[in-house]
Amino acid sequence: MDVDEIEFSDWQIEKLRSALRRYRTISKHGGRLPSWRQVRDDIVFSDSNVEKYESDDAELVFKEEALRRFGEAVNDTMGIERLRDVARFLLDEELLSPESFQEERQDLAAFLAMHEYFANDYEVVPDLVSAFSGTFTYRVPSAPGAPANVTIRLHLMPDASGKYVRVEEVIQTDLVGERARSQTPYTRRRRKDNEFIRTTSRKGFGFPITRLNILHVFLDGATPGDRMTYIQAGELHDGSTAEGFFLMRNGEATGRDQWARDIFYEEPVVLPNICRFDPDQGQEA
Image 1: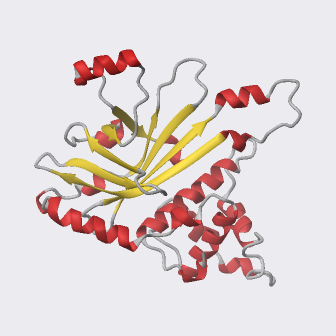
Image 2: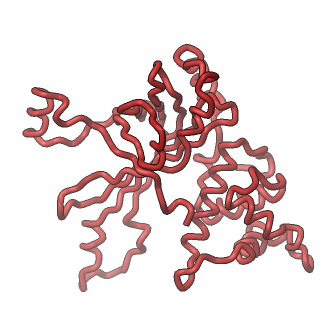
C-alpha cells in the first residue's frame, strides 16, 4: 500500500482519527493519556517517518496543535503530508490495516445504484442522515463459562453528501476459555494477550428507507457471500443516538438450541434477532 498516493476521503480521515484515538488509549501511563506533543513525537520519530524528520528541529514542521485539533475533531483535516505521516505510523502500529483503509469504488458504485432506487428525498428532513453517526456497541449475551465473549461494534460515518452513511462492522471475539487454560501452572509458554483476540470486519453503506426513515445497512466481508444486513427496529426518534437504537441483524445463524428454535418457528416474535447498539462511551478516551 503506497501511502504517498492516498488523497484521503472523508471515510479514510475518520478511520485515521479513530485509530489515532485508540493509540492514545493503549499508550496510557499511570492512567493518564499521553499528551499530543508526545503523540506527535512518537509519529515523527517512528521508524516509518524518522528519515523525513531526521534534521534538527524538523519535527516542528508537524505542529502538535494541528494534531490535537485533528484528533479531537476540532478541524476536519490536516495537511496531506501530515495525514500521510500519521497513516504510515498507524499502519506500522497495526492500528490500521491496508485492507480496511482502502476504498472500493466498485462497491460504492453498486451501492449508489441501489440508493437511487430505494432512497427517500431527505430535503424535508434536515440532518437526517447525520443522526446516524458515531460508534455503537453490542455485547452478545453469553452463558456463564462460555468459551468466548463476542462484541460487535458498528462505526457509522455520514458521507459529506448527506445522502448515506459509511458503515464498518467490527466483531471482536475474546477466547476466554482458551485464555484460562493457557494460564495453568503447567503451561510451557506464556501467550500474549492479543493471541486470544480474533477480529473480523465488514464494510458497506446504509441509508434511511420508507416514510418512517428506517435505517437499512448493507455490509460485505472479505470472502464471497460473507454479507450482513441490519434493519432498524423502529423509526428514528429524537435522542436516539444518546440512548442507542435497535437493529435486526440478518446474515448468520443465531446459534439457538433446539428448544429456542422450536419456540421461534412457532411464534417468531418471541425470539427476534434484534440487538440493542449503545453509543460507545469509550471511543473518545
